[in-house]
Image 1 (cartoon, rainbow, N blue to C red):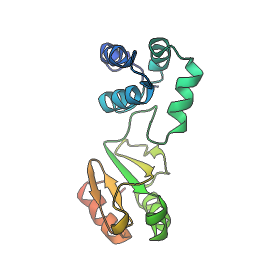
Image 2 (spheres, rainbow, N blue to C red):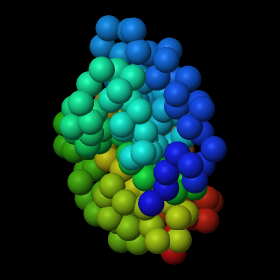
Image 3 (cartoon, one colour):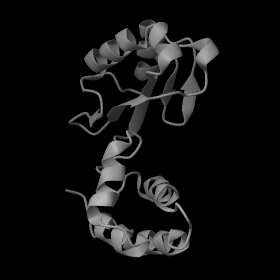
Image 4 (spheres, rainbow, N blue to C red):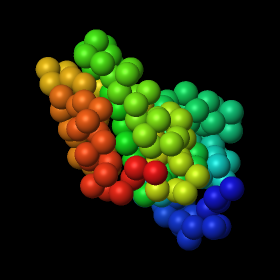
Length: 160
């Protein structure tokens, strides 16, 4: 398990907690900031977050596990999000997700064993008129098809 001591980020997590501690509704912005910094919310950070935000560990854990966006393990080198909101779903994103799982060799919400890629669902990437959409790392792609996805994954050397 990756922890704060495995990655020298404990001081940064503590700094972020201090920044958000007095902010009304600061837990969500704090979790986003930690994930943006670390790539995930380390499980070892939960007690620190709970104490700093005057919440129980269960409350913090509940928020982290409720929202698909947050992860408690490091992501792969590349992260592929497939939109599964209504517009994308009606244009074939479910079949696209099944295709991605087969091609990438990992299930939704997991990182492939070699650590190269993580496959995630997204619930709106903002391209509803150009559905289905996919985000690979920080770049969003519209009107995605299995063939287009294969080409993008091949460029990233993600295909197994």
